[in-house]
Length: 273
Image (cartoon, rainbow, N blue to C red; front, side):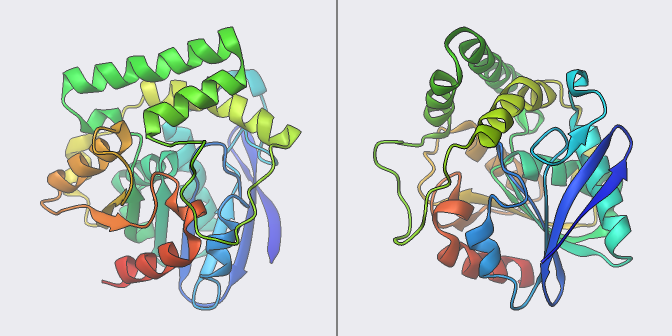
């Protein structure tokens, strides 16, 4: 594994490169840094050069001004600069949740950098009709209020409820080791809720430009994600925008971490189809 940093406007990005073959960038969900999908990456490195990174503000990707917050445009520009540092060729990209939203921004602004984007349940309210968009933006703002009033544990329970996740009965492949709630992961969750949620609510995704991108986009949903879940609705709307149907992946919203073996197989097929 090669681990290094890249200076970008307003931050220093940490990233890792592993494997051999066509380049695949994975943009993570939630509080996830470069190692969040380690079990999935382990199953991809034999035939892909996999790039993972810490989003600005998380873990080892340090903001010049930690109080300044983040935007989806900044996240997408970070990926643009990271890819420009690594290759002159279009890459394959997997975006999960917020990572998928970042990917949607990237393919509208720099379509030459991406050959195919698998967008797993993007948190992109602007894909939805105005009334549903406003309702889900209020939902995110309410989770921020829960976090400020009652702390991280209560906020995580609220997030699980919104995403249709049952913490008491997790659905996962056997033999996986759960990621511990380390102090760094706690800090990353808090940054995600306080700053990335705000970035989602204030998102300026150009849906008309997205509909015209030449990049092949594969909208994806988790097999066990409840149909009423906001992120799943965004994936369905994205598929409708492109005149396709969403691709079903193993697990739920976090299938990339809960079902890495099966997820890797479906991902390979989606990337190469």
